[in-house]
Length: 498
Ligand code: GLU
Image (cartoon, rainbow, N blue to C red; front, side, top):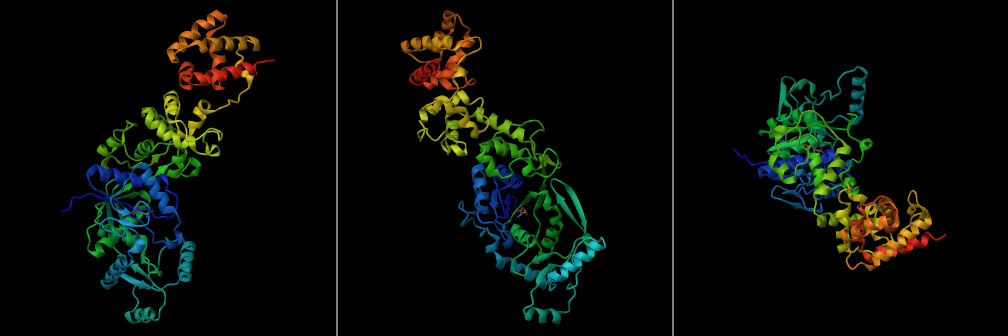
């Protein structure tokens, strides 16, 4: 027996990399990495009408951003194939599906169906009217061989359908959901090959999972009803099915299916909003899996080490956007200032209209200056997209603020200007510029001026930052440097002139 774990993520390139979809990729990846197996990406592009240009690249981009590397599948640019079981695009594997369709027809497990879409529509309408379950009425199932041959030879369009047994039942042994049984008579003769000679999802998925030696099929719960059909195909083709694990749905806080209403649904939007890949990865893993029902923050390495199929939950997972933002803050605070600075740079250097720093700030930014700033904002930063908002005043040449902000409660413009002038004179005389020196200068100065420290610090804070709320004042001044602080205080004094 072959115990090698081979799992796959099988996206259809029909849209954005949705959170739920990427959660499926993630669980497969975690299992492969934890078990020393292989993670395969297979592109299910058989529904030619639903293909969306660029969708595959967005999906691969999302995987790469989250660090979900694949051993086999399309190349990173989505143009080629890598791996020994390729090609990994179903549209490039048509001969294989035709070969197995012929086997199924030859053994009597499948048959040609010539029913037109007009006829199928009429059946559907009649079934609706009579409140019957929808399904094909099996008109072509027992067509005489000579008629079949004649219609096929005349070029009449046809599909191939699977001959579902009319009796008995099919049981799926699902790792998450346990045993689920379907009565065969409730399943209709589903199509396996379409009239455009492309396979349907059912056939292509079964053939590929077998040929690619997939050991475990882990996919969204919505595919569970397809699984009895897949089992019938495995049995008819004489193959042993893989193991199945259907992952719970992801719902919004209102328990409806996750949608735009609950926030961004595309993983790439989370990147734009400034989430860290490790934080999103941690968060997504907890949508349907838990380590011990209580631990929230788990490193990537620990997730790989501990991920197990038996702790996948049966109940739907609830998406909690606030928890994701909180978790991102946890990851931001745990980073080294260097690593955080690297992550913040693209957010700071992008266009102002996209949330970057004001356009008049010279780019590229001074890296060593940024490194002095980062520790001051690290505590407060939850999303990388807040970088410009939190650090802008450090970089701006001219602070734009209302001079009235300088005047603290219980003071007037003249007293404020005086306090700033005194501050400026003492600061000018300093030979070193660090938090402790600045603090030692300002505390007694308030006393000397006969004002409260809060009043003095408040005026100086606005003068050097243009804001009333900032990181700790003296650390901020240390990071800003003497030259900037002196120039800003001088401008503040000017702005207070009557
Ligand atoms: N192509 C299907 C999807 O987009 C894959 C289903 C499966 O994993 O079998 O979800």
